[in-house]
Image (cartoon, rainbow, N blue to C red; front, top):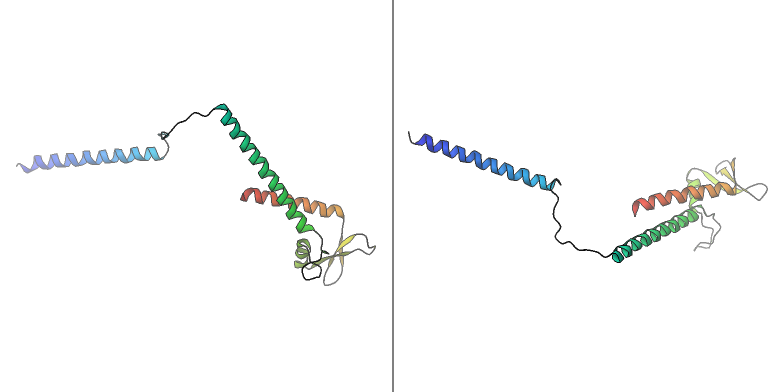
Length: 156
């Protein structure tokens, strides 16, 4: 029969084609996975002065960014902890963020009995819970500043 040799040859060619296709696919996957590094399209030499200028610019940008983050986080902490008593647009006292946080949990800050220090009291009963020393506000401000700095550093 003459058909059998033809079929055998056709099947053999088909297997070779599939093998070549498989090799091409494996080769292209190998390139995309990073095994064979791509060649740069253009390669140039930078002078030492250009490299130094680039490093200086990067360092200055990092210093400027750090300075701006410090300023913004400091302003955030100052505004949040700043006590009320500043005149708002409506003419009344404007509560600070710290006061609003305390209000949300049913607390308030009032002047102490001696009139010098502040105390934290329950709004509904007026029960004094704690004295609020100036050092406590400073430590709260520092924690807020550091937290704001970490958040801003992660965002920018």
